[in-house]
Amino acid sequence: MMNESNSADPASEERDAPLHETAATRAAGSEQTPEQLAEAQRYGRWSLAFDLVDTIVDLVFLSLMTFWLARPVDRWLQTLPLAWLQSGAIRWGAMFFVVYALHLLVSFPVSYFSGYVLEHRFGMSRLTLGQWLWRFVKRNL
Image (tube, rainbow, N blue to C red; front, top):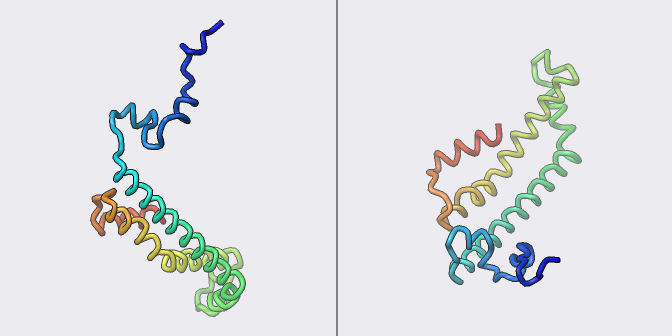
């Protein structure tokens, strides 16, 4: 029979530890100061706010495209003088590309502020704007 005082349950130890002192921070040998915790919480709130704004922008954009703009864009694609666009499957692919490109344009400001400005404001990134843009392009290809 195992003595309970000698057995250390890592899960309970993790639960009982203060918020700023977890196994990861103890293993790394670093503790966060209250100021660092407050800054991490501010970053978390801003990050969550940008995530919510991004979700709202996505929902509004996709709703607009679905209910009001899909047919006009499809008609516009049919008027283009490209014979190969008259095929339904190819026109569907072209529609996908148009919607995706428009979505990137609409959501770019949120991506810029959440991925570049916020990260720099909290000292979490050293990427230049050009490096960040290149990463953004690669991520969306």
